[in-house]
Length: 310
Ligand SMILES: [Zn+2]
Image 1 (cartoon, protein in one colour):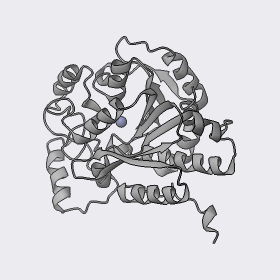
Image 2 (cartoon, rainbow, N blue to C red):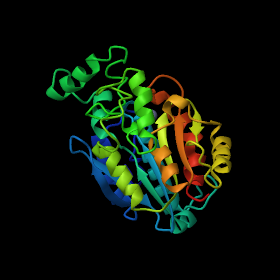
Image 3 (cartoon, rainbow, N blue to C red):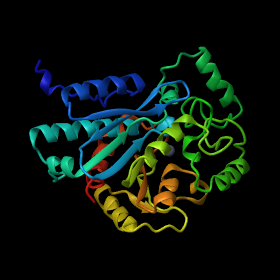
Image 4 (cartoon, helix red, strand yellow):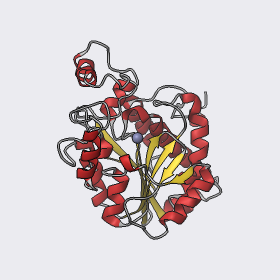
């Protein structure tokens, strides 16, 4: 077997925290030009890694799996890292762009798994009957309408991490409380305040330390790109959104009002008045099956490349 040709990121089986950490180590060994750091840790002390591609001035950031049952998005970003590295070392174009130019002009920060604890639950890595499993189950028992464990989006504390950001958090609270999410839940509980959860705080602080030109926040599902927050109109934001829509085939749309507050991309737009996008990949019920992976990945290749140079 020629080890050099072995693909590291396996997109044919469920992903989880251990596999991601192993893949990151393997990628770093094979492609030492990758820079790895941890931006913080989860409630249960799992690391939240960030992989940087490139050392250019134009900083962009892609994140995935802030929602546990959307873990297929972690695979999208991990595979992109590997494909970029392959293109870079073989000096082959990626989506018709030269990876060396991208590497020299841009720094792509990739946070592939923001919510590692609960991904272990949704991917079946927490044993039924274990203390951890029972902890999740107790929270879920108050919300019998949410499928367990497949409907779990929140973190270990039952807080929806994408409702934790200081961008009309109170409004999000009002809306979600009216929907009945008034306590820790598998989804849609905003928490007891903004940024109370370590995973949300980690990406918040990491963002503040940088000067991102734009951010992509990966979710499932709907094949839609959300680009707006309130009345903010960051320069180029709609135009870039249109380009992303064109290369992916996804619809460019405004966020539905019931989920238009307190998300990471909402806060990013509010804080910087720069382009931020929620990308909802794939179609169907979360967690999406891996049979969709190839289509999702090829739909998003253009976005992932262009976002670093646009
Ligand atoms: Zn989501």
